[in-house]
Every structure is written in C-alpha cells, then in structure tokens.
Image 1 (cartoon, rainbow, N blue to C red):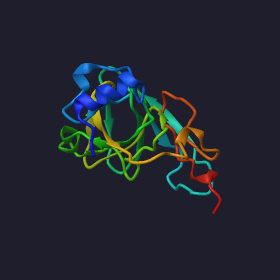
Image 2 (tube, one colour):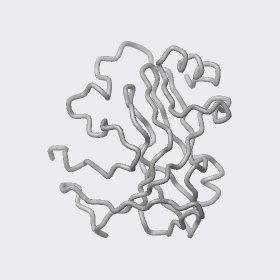
Image 3 (spheres, rainbow, N blue to C red):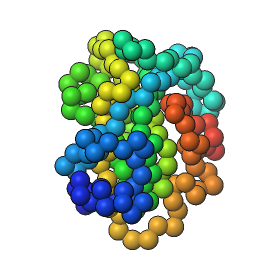
Length: 178
C-alpha cells in the first residue's frame, strides 16, 4: 500500500518518517519531491573494479549549473536527509527529469526500513543537459510494511551506507565477501 500525502504527514508527526529540510510544497498526492544537492562525483578511473575501492572526484555545481555528458556515470546526492522506520521508501525520477533524458538511478531505487541518510543518485543522460543544485530531481514514494521488523538497515552490522553525509557516496561493493 502506497502512503498518501495525509499518511506521509502522519508518519512525519509520529517520527516514523523524517525529511530534513521538509517543505510542504514538495509534498505530492502520494509522494515527496527531493532535490539535487550541490555536489556531484565521478569515478577517477574509466575501468571500475567491483573488488576494489574505486575513488571519486567531487564537482561542485555552480550557480549557472553543470552540463552532464552522455557516457559518464555521475553520482549525485539529494538535499534532503531522510529516515523511515515503518515504511519502505522508493526513489523514482520525476517525469520532467526523464523527459530531459536523465536517469537518476540504475538499480538502487529502493531504500530499506531504517535507512537514515541522504540519497546517492546514479545519474546518467542521453544527451548533454544542464542541471542545477536545488532542482527537483526525484520523488520518494512510501510503501507500508506488514509485520514486525527484526533487521533495520541502520542497525545491521554490515550496513555500508550509514555514515551521514551531504556528498554522494561511491560503491562499497568491495566491502562484500565474494
């Protein structure tokens, strides 16, 4: 079941959903709009290795924006810090972003109950496009969970993305054993 605007607000009032900063104008009928933060990251190496820590360089988006280029994976970040304790958050790109040829995630559209952080975006584009810090980039949709939870993300011993940050976070696949 997808939470409506009223249920999202109830979750916020109960502390089950936290969105900082919260702007009532970003609340939709059944979603909450998130905005592009001021920092992008790109990998230093063209060839990435899943077993090693691939380092990134950071790019600050200036006031006149930044032009994304096709063929490059950009890691972005939301301005909003979020927490969810009773619902599963899904992040989807806004249709206006898709119509500019921008994808905001390759595979990581679902958060876990207990995820407490900003969202790292996996941004790619089909043609050059200028983006701006603060622009609406995606929307969070909350699905109610059924049943008790034993394994909240923020309490898992092997959770890799729990350090609070305002910058995009590179892949931590290298921390897995395989």
